[in-house]
Amino acid sequence: MIVCVAVVGHQNNPLYIQSFTEAEDALKLHHIVHCSLDVIDERVNNPSKSGTTLNEAFLGLLYPALNYKVYGYLTNTKVKFIMVTSDLDVRDTDVRSFFRKFHAAYVDAVSNPFHVPGKKITSRTFSESVTNIVSSYSFN
Amino acid sequence: MMGLSLRLEDAGYAVGSRVLELLCNREKFSNAEFSDKSLLVVLWLLFSLFQGNRRETRLLGVLSFVHSTVWKVLFGKVADSLEKGTEHEDEYMISEKELLVNRFISIPKDMGTFNCGAFVAGIVKGVLENAGFPAVVTAHFVPIEGQQRPRTTILIKFADEVLKREARLSQ
Image (cartoon, rainbow over all chains, first blue to last red; front, side):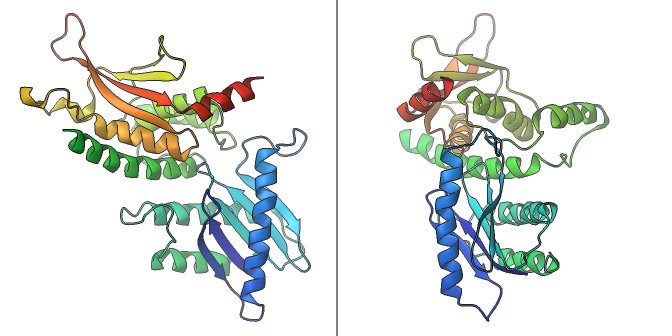
């Protein structure tokens, strides 16, 4: 089950954080998201030639925390999407398609001419579509 | 005059940043609007360019992205030419015989060097800056022999850090 999704801007400023479970501490999830930003920076600045290709958008499993897995995705404008899931066996293709839908929802939210780039995403439509995407992926 | 240019540029910048996000998302999927003939072109483009959704890190890569993909989405055709400036290392020019925004606008004499292409310059600036290539982008008229209307050139001057990074990546 996906417990948390986050959108972080290119200066590591948070644009959108949403957790989908009341049981866990929201702060702990935010902390996990914050730590994973470092992992992303490491991957982006030191590309390993043997691993992912230089300009791949989907970063894959960032690091396994205690009970969670954290996945990352980088868009062309250095905006990062982070997804925390509590499922232990997650298929790569599922995560990729989740990020694809998430990216589409994000592009819709940013295309709003009244949205200021760099500020938090306050669009209600975006929250609703993210909730829909997450609930359709609860059988990861 | 300067104020008007700046406002056009800011309006274009907002468009450019959104266009970049949209295009990078669309790269994986096919374009919704195309006629029968351009279907083949789009399929070829998709196959050759959009395998694996690359994020551009090289200067020439992002410039050709602007010159073809962005122009095609905005104006329905690729830009006429992309040239490297001879005087300075950091200058590149995208030229267009008749820029769409200038086609039906005439500039009165007392506005001097004002160019409505400042809007398109702002779009290019938005795309480049959000892709990680900060630049100063301006639009100029270039008179051509034998043609009444001058050609419009978008002049792109990259920031120092871009050139340094490019030099480092080229090694």
